[in-house]
Image (cartoon, rainbow, N blue to C red):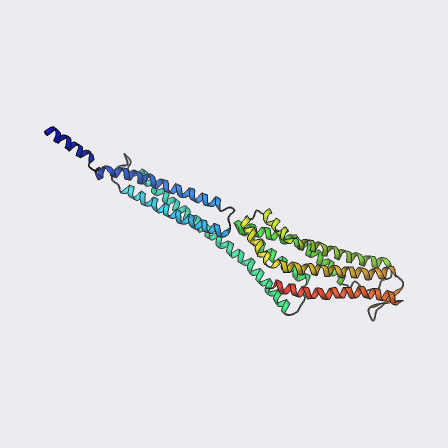
Length: 364
């Protein structure tokens, strides 16, 4: 009887819950281990987000960064809490009861410092990029305001103004490309490279246009030899060539811009956004630009036609200095000369109307 009672008491002892003092070391060990593990997990998550953001759009980058910050904050908070729990335990850590929780606390505090420094640095870079981008936006708005004023006053938009606008925008983009970071700097570099392609074309066109307008190409005072007419023809051909090159660029400018964006490794999402912005207004602008280039071609060919009439019939005409007109010996030559002149004037008038319309569109 006594033997059975002893056995029953022994069995009941085996089923009793463990003493809190005995379970405390287990929980303290786990808390210490996880206080070290959680900041390591946070580091891996941050690195994963950085890698995934390389080709992501700006909106996706912002979303992923916010997710990483929130998750990392929870992990760090958990790590610090577990380190404190382990430190508050009186036993269960062997001969060195505070080593692992102290290491966990240090790891979490260090990670907080790194993230805080990185956040401040990232915020400063983001702020700097926004300020730099604003300079480009402000330059664009200033140019639009000036073009709008020109359109409202009915003044023609000169090639000098076009070159000045390109230079000012190129300067603003250069500042962003030199001082900005990330996709903002890459986009600015690609855009500046694109403008650098068109600047020499507009410069050559401007010079060629001046050569046929100043002095007036059709001023025949002082023309005594046929080779003098050949020199004038060469100026017209140079103008037509400059106009042709400018038209070739304008016709293909979207593809050329995309090539520059890819050459400077601008993220694909940013490329599509940049192209979408340009496509919103480029179709109507391109249609007007092609018509303007066609009017230049018409004017150039008409000038060549007039010079050919003078060249082929050299000696059959004179130049009236008072009236500033060519006087022909027969009416047939005069009619042919006048037909070319009328074509030139018609193209010039049409071009002025299209330039005003293009200026109004660009100033919106």
